[in-house]
Image (cartoon, rainbow, N blue to C red):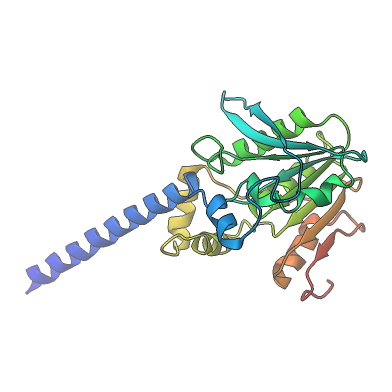
Length: 264
């Protein structure tokens, strides 16, 4: 009887270890090579697929070289009214195609509007950038495109990236619009992964290990210089209050728009 119990215990331990290894690998794979869903989501939603469908002129097509020799594909539109260069940074599993419906709004007061596909997204090269590489890539695009005033616009993980970029006072920007930035909290990241299609919700230890192996880290948000006009839009009241406290610049408040959130 004791031998049977020991045998069963060994089987349970082996099965748990195998499940853990598979879960780490699947989460790691999801983080490093997310499905490229931008086109499918656009088709499903009926959003514009081309600049022409969005009522825009045909964009200029660029490729911006990164530090490791990879290149990111870029669309760019020239505005007629002057203003800053507006750089659009898409969400995780998204792409520059996500912004086609918004370009016209920014063209009205921009010298230029620029949208690039990040690594592992849209038409970008295979594999996502690690945390520092994502920020470095975004900064390279910003420096390649802009010499004067810069407006950064980001959605989802792209919103977290533009907020992190704006906190870097060595590369000043004039305005940031961040829509639904990601939280670095593991529980919130797990929720995002499940919402994006991961077939199971990774427990915190599994997620932490997979993120460490993948080199993935959600940017930690810091106060942004007072010279930058910061507008943040979120849907969760608790996250809105946290963002206000993290981004606040002394007694200079940051605009965080959340209809259901009370003022701190």
